[in-house]
Length: 162
Image (cartoon, rainbow, N blue to C red; front, side, top):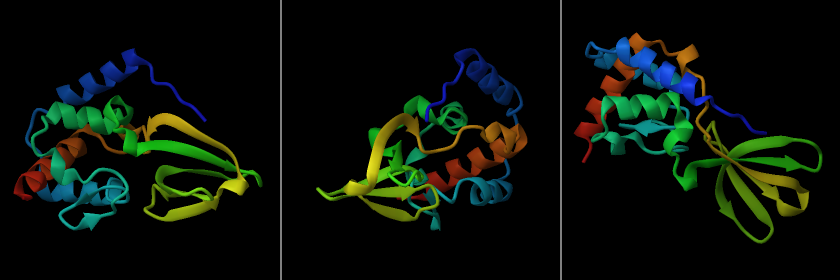
C-alpha cells in the first residue's frame, strides 16, 4: 500500500523543471493541460470535479510552490485530502479520501469524483496512506513546456476568481 520518494531525486526533478520553465506559459495551452490532467480531481472556473482542492485558492502561490505541489503532491497535503486504502473482505481495494462516516458505513470519494459507500462490516482493512490522493509521476506526462502553460492557466484563472 505504501510508496516512498527519494529526496535527492525530488530535488533533481524540481530543478530540472525550474531550469526549463523560464518563459511565460500560454494560457489556452494550459487550459488544455488542466482539462486533460487535472480536471478529473480539481475544479477551476467551472471546469472539473471537486475531489481535491479548488484551485481558485492558489492565486497567491509562487510558480515554484505550484510546481512542487504538482510534482510532489505529498509535500504539503492537508489532512482532509489524505488518501486511504480500503480493503473489503472480498479482496477489493478502493482508494480515495474519506468523504463521510457513520457507525455503519465509510464513504470514500474516489479520484474520478464518484462516491463509494462501504459497509463497515465489509471492511477488512482501512489504512491511511499518509499521501495525497493526487498521483505522483506527472513528470512522465507533463513536460516542462506544458507545465509552464498549466501554471500560467492556474495562476491567471485563480487571480480572476473572487
